[in-house]
Every structure is written in structure tokens, then in C-alpha cells.
View 1 (cartoon, rainbow, N blue to C red):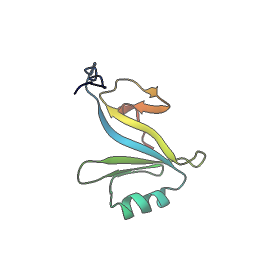
View 2: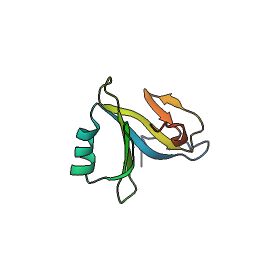
View 3: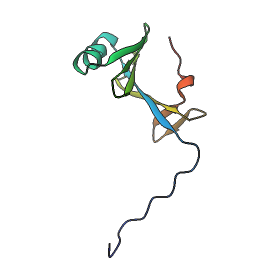
View 4: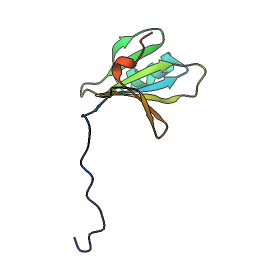
Amino acid sequence: MHPRWWVDPVPARGPRALLRRVVLRTPSLPAAMGFFAGVLQGDVEQESDSRVDLVWPGGARIGLALDTDAAPGVDRLEIEGLNEPRTLIGAQLVPPAATARA
């Protein structure tokens, strides 16, 4: 405690937010499904030709979005409680309702 070398965090401001889902870009849905549904045993929650949403028993969720023209990686974070899309440190943050289902 002495000397104290940290500063207490500032209390949070604004409405509460909850990370609902991490959406990952993939050039191949079958390959991504093989890993996330096969190896990691995620259950398909919703599926289309261009996106698959997976869920695990503890409530963790990811979306796999087909994008054959982009490098694989994190596409966006779906945040419940966010009222409009924004970018923070290069990451796209979007409300879940703003996510297009194909």
C-alpha cells in the first residue's frame, strides 16, 4: 500500500453493455464449422448460406461470417446495450439488431 503506485479506476458512465457475440470472418464456412462446431463442440443456433451462429452451454456465442475476399479474423463485436455502431481502436462495435442476416 505504501507507496501506492496505481490509480483507482473511474466509475463507468452510460448504460450497461453486454458482449453478445464475436463475429469472425472466414473464407470457408465448412472449415470454420469443422473447428468451432467440431473440435470446440459449439452448437448451431442459427444458420444461413453466409453465416452460422454457434452457442456453448455456458452461453458463449460466436458468429461465423463468410467473406471470401477478406483475411480471416475478427469482423465485429455485437454489443447489447449499444444504440449505434461505432469503431473503437479499429474494432467494429455494433448492436445485435444492426447485424444483417443473410
